Length: 480
Image (cartoon, rainbow, N blue to C red; front, side, top):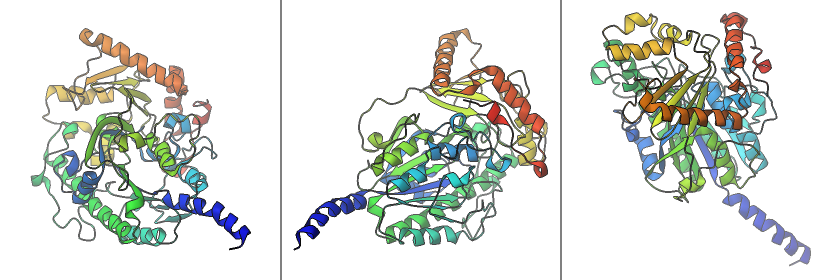
């Protein structure tokens, strides 16, 4: 053999082998659902996701940084909290990230030699910053048209090359409208007589039971579509070398869920399977945040991490290693559309949770908006006959105090505020200090409370007329 060719092969073969050894990444994102799956104990049939959990790792305490679509997605794309990347509200209301050059998941994986594709909604501004090689089914598709395309487009992309791939598939279920049946799925839809209302709403009536039933129908249909997608991956022969991650982008669009800082809004399902190297049938209690996914994906790809990421790679946990993990979990809220600004910061440990309301002197405009938006009625009509302590919890949503402190062990649905209870004064002080330190460490501009009030006022002044959508000048307020 020619000496030059031999030398060239000596150089190229390790490079080629290294590229083939990089695991593919299949990232599955569903819309507007918490951990309401069979494997999380919910009364709903989700056999495909249950099997995924059996083959991999289920995170019992997984969260998004903010319970909104664009805010959640920008956070996992960049590995940054919304106050760090700038996407503090919906992309459809002209909110956007501060800088297009912010490092992000698909662009950094492209640099590491990955083919990249996105199927379904992206919902981040500017979308061009992500630089996917291929996009398909670009609309939100809330009416679930042509759902077979998701698996078909995935098949085309997966089989289009031998290089490692990053494929993100975004399903519209379980976003509103809660369609009872699409394409004959689910085969046997649930009705109000089959279910009780989601427990964290703390209200159980016929209206909410029917809504919950149709939400569960969305979850069962989602499970079928994800089963189709996983079948495509297996048929490609690339299953064994693929890291599979499934999450919801935030909690359900129901009472005390989406657009709030309560557990029903920020807690999500997170299931990860890594056939070649992962731990099988493991349930972890460690706090996971979707900002951990960017460093996780770069870790498995062998790519360098950008500086300053607040999240951590989940790889040590996936490999079953014993590691010192985070003591506190932080979330936040700013606004969703212009209807519901209400700046909040939240911290929880393994038992207690603190919600810090930054403009507590103001009534929360998102409260009645949620009832009218979801049920076309005011709160009084839907909350008739509830107990006094539950009514007090709902009134607290409308007019929050500066601090809300909950004992999640004894009060998982955040009903009783302990912030004024002297027995819990030390807990309150400890969580306040942890929250302030996090704000300082992450350069949170709303550590100055005056800026929170300014943000609240300017969003309200900008208005809610959809025909006159314009960018809120929040850049001036959230200025680092």
